[in-house]
Image (cartoon, rainbow over all chains, first blue to last red; front, side, top):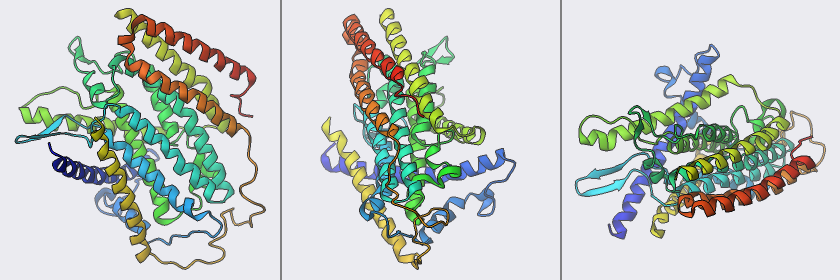
Length: 346
Length: 118
């Protein structure tokens, strides 16, 4: 493939990915409102379109037409840059995530991901942890007490849980022996006894999975770890002073991060696009893998919403103690035990 | 391959252009009539007392310092985990020694009370 085709193919993939991702973000907001509504014996959005399906569109339009206040007491360059940083990093982390096998049109073949780098997992972790800048800068530049406290809490929480998140993935890396997300998925092929898939979750990484999921909830500032925006104490946390499109950007960043976390959980612990295959070659090659991937990601997003509808919020000292005193030793123990078992087996 | 990273930068550039355009487009259609009370820092309707960038608890600094220590260790473990099978028994023992040193430090900060949030 020469340079020109490479760039054009990448551009097409990027535009498609951004379009799909933004739609997914909009509809996970809709899904959240609908599901939480039903859990609380309400209907959720029903007015705009059938089942409220056009609600995200209406919300988007409303965000554009809302007055955008920039209070005079803020530090303007950072105040404007912060939501952009948050959303750029949140969206970019999706760029190395593979959603299926290669797609083939005639002689031309390209993998179903924007780019396949051999340290994909590190790229995702690196870019998502840059997201903390958006939050911290928003909290600091707003020059409001609520914002500052929210930003501080969010950054402290995100850096604390990032450690257990990183450590929980090391067991997977020992088993797969690669940082490329595509190779990690391919290392999970096959089944035990013909029906239990050899996903890393079933290869003994179940503790790692729960550590990962808990830390990921804290990383994305979601209930039960949504202390940075605890309404009862901090109004809205770091985005108290934001309105209109800038506020919408923090929202987009949060939901895009949720989707990235769900994709990573699928790839690392639940076999990515692998699943029972049947039917003709084109079905097995392209359609089924993508469907499996989307279904697994959907399950994780649903669990996110389910947890939100079920659990109360932690207290801040409990949150920090939980991260440092429980999750971190658990992650280290999991890593040591995995290493010992793998070493004994070989 | 290094050229595989190019699309990531194209992606960042693409969003980096898209988002300011959205903001500017919104500027054309949205109303803009600020007033004095709208522009006040939000403190539940009460006039703000002093600077909002005041003092805050030292715990946040401790968390930041601990983060640096443990995050470096995590990054150190990543390449080891990837090459685990090739390194064999030697690599395993080396890393266990490293982890023991780290765990001693962890127990020490726990006993020192750096993990308590008072």
